[in-house]
Length: 429
Image (cartoon, rainbow, N blue to C red; front, side, top):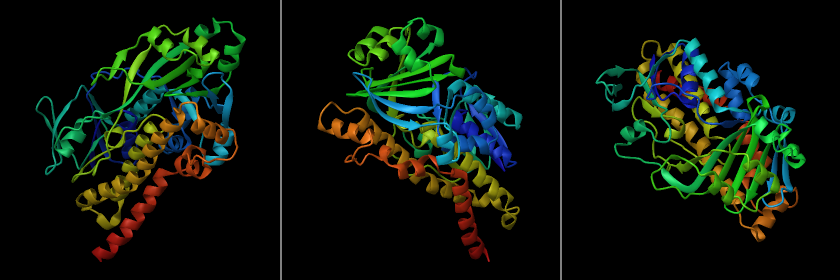
């Protein structure tokens, strides 16, 4: 079975690795002419690290990662602690796999190297211009036509394959939020020589400040030599702009009056990028014939639950496993290709409900994170501190987290395949 994957992000690489581990032939097309280190920190929850284990890259990732001691949520104005969720051993005991933070460039590099090691054919500087659904072909910018049994669009939020599959333009929707993203070296923070700041940075903790219309996330990456800082606020970027160089003074003014420790950290930032946060309306379908989508191409989400990349790598691992099961099934020896559309529909069916839960959870977090001071905020803070919960917020429900991060996406896919195979076997007989 030959698979073409469009897009060499984390989801596309997870799919490529998964397919190669199943013995499939994989061609990975990436429009960027060169793979450059981009982004900053990323949280990898237990469901995503479980995928990394299945793909054989978890030990290497952990060598470059930090497993935080805990998640700590603080009030925006005085820094008082509202909530603590233990990490490390507690995460492994609860959910069966570690939670860690890592530089996105390290994560991507390790996945890319594993794909290369397994023999994935990677073509950089290759832009997709068209798809032939009847012939299962990809048309690239130089006029070349590439054929495969399966074509997978993993080309992100601004997906070309999504628009071709839908048959019309499908631009992302602006959410009304933006993110300032910055990194600081340990030396830059140490230069403050401030004991209050030291109490925050001199530990391996993910710290979140919640405030009206805004929140901030701060944690160490790169073995503690660098710190990742993301500040979320209402969007003031021009319509259609994606990423621009931010103004440091504007960023600091946006968080004036916040926790003194955070203000001091912001004083050390020399440059910052502004990212417009976008998502997409739920698609009626991700699949057409032997062509399907994964990750942000079909279910982009607000980054308020730390699950965007996790859902993409789950998609990729699930797709690879399902296609491998189909390809190796003796019942379909020599005829498996004709069942590919059914398998892609099976993939969409089991993934759509799962990813919808995440999208809705991230949207709920936006509401509860950004409450103005008042009765609702007071109810939230009481619940965060362990008091009576009258919010209904999914973040505070243990069963929700068990389902979200304790989930084994590949095992779920294997069960779905066996059920499909049983029904298919009966119909063939």
